[in-house]
Image 1: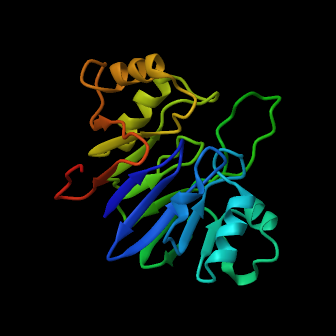
Image 2: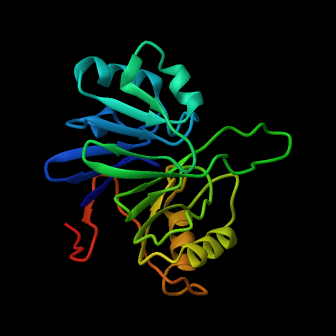
Length: 219
């Protein structure tokens, strides 16, 4: 598979000429959906879900289908069977990609801030996008998309999370609010100079593509 990073928390996955996009939110340009027939949305927050962008993409592409939680699905009323609500433990096939759903809730920001539902997606048994939660899928993960900056986590949480999931590779996502100094600080703790995680940690620039799997190579 090929993994392309877009703005903030959005990625595109490609194999055999098929494209699947995860979390094309308000910090991501609409070009992320070019050529995609399948979209996964982890939760309803604006940086992961843009109703306007998805509706426009659905108008342009009658093949486009969306899998997400029930709260997001309710906001996409009118698209009918093109939107499927999924929850923890479910499996489905999206445009040739096998997907497992893990998790139920967004991470706690503060007890006074209401939680929303959040589902993570394990794609082809290899690539895990947790959305806004440090969900441990309970199954081997080759490549973890790691939300490195959020009001609900600390760098210490991230280190422990990577250790528990134990992927081979971890790629930074959810980094749209970080400047260069913040990015360097996170890299220092999660990379080789940090206290140690079992994964090779990397950050892709927006638009960069990497091949994930046994023959991984960046381009």
